[in-house]
Amino acid sequence: MASVGSVTRQIAALEISAKQNGATKPTRPLKTAGQTSVSKLLTKFAAPNPFPDPKLKPLAKPKPGNTTQSSTKQSSQKPAATQKPLTEAELDIGKYDGGFEIENEKRGEAVQGEAARELALDSSVSRTRPTREWHLTDFDIGRPLGKGKFGRVYMVRTKVEPNYILALKCLYKSEIVQARVEKQIRREIEIQQNLRHPNVLRLYGYFHDEKRIFLMLEFAGKGELYKQLTKYGSFSERRSAVYIDQMADALSYLHSKHVIHRDIKPENLLLGINGELKIGDFGWSVHAPSNRRTTLCGTLDYLPPEMVEGREHNEKVDYWALGVLTYEFIVGSPPFEEMSGYNATYKRIAKVDLRIPPKLLQYDPEKRLALSEVRKHPWVVRYRTKTPTPEAVA
Ligand code: AMP
Image 1: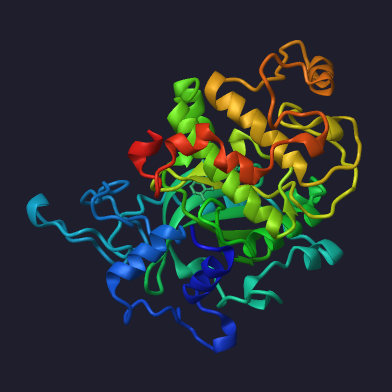
Image 2 (image 1 turned 120 degrees about the horizontal axis):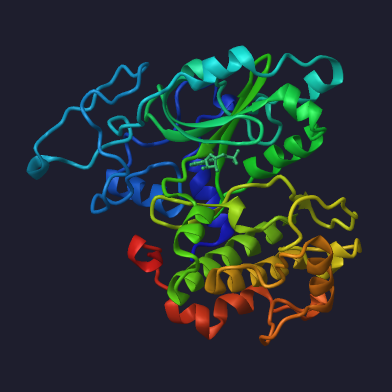
């Protein structure tokens, strides 16, 4: 496994062009480097190349007549026998339904004053990682990927070469202000933009207009993990162990960057094109040490005793959540779930009411199994393959 330092260095070489260089086009050495090594790097570090391996099936084969409205490039269809793997520029991103414009007519309004300043989010002027300037017109927009609380998400392709495939997520500023989460959104963006790990969804850049903020996210080709869990009820031991290994690796990375996630649950996990797990939501994350007490909202199911009891907490809250996930992947429901309601779940968490030998689900955070030990655990090691393949996690 590459060290965090080497991952960061190699990814830095692949950065979507930085403004400091004065470049208007990406400065990555794509044209000069051998295609194989570039593809390998893209696969390894989960840059948004959806065709890392020519042997893998494309996500969606371009159908004649099913191209984007705004796309200027058409993929030429060849007979299967002679068909080469598609490049990003040729990959079909699906048909755009005009949703961004239709919604923008009806939804949200411009925000004023302090809130407007707070939400003027633009990665081209980021202090730590400036990117080139981006606008909505820089993208060919494809199919809708989903709807979030503050707006829609679309599959897009950058018009500028090498025609990256991304997920573009829209957030309505006035709704963020209404929900009073301006600071939380800013923190989420700042944290996510600085993270580089194969199991952490990349945020490549962000920009805004009068009413909206747009996040340029790594495209998670296989969608939501939660949907898979709902579809199958639970996962095989092999699939669970592969995911837990990837989670432990990603969480170790986050903790080494002093980031505590605090909201690990299936709804916040996506799947990359190779079926690899991606932590995709940093809405509750904080920089450690965070001994702040929090107001809890949403499900209690993944929260450790120290958080449900409103005590101080540290990165070990994520160890607990990993224990809950392990249980849920194998059994199909989280261990402390109580249909009778919030209070019953609270009591079961506080008592660690569980009938299996707990390694991560320990009341005392200090007694929880270290993430490095999780990765060495015989159950995890048994199913580990060098690189996750669709077969390994299917
Ligand atoms: P969210 O606002 O993050 O909850 O996103 C709404 C929906 O869009 C999710 O439930 C996913 O189905 C989809 N989605 C969000 N981000 C991505 C992404 N990076 N890649 C693929 N689909 C995504």
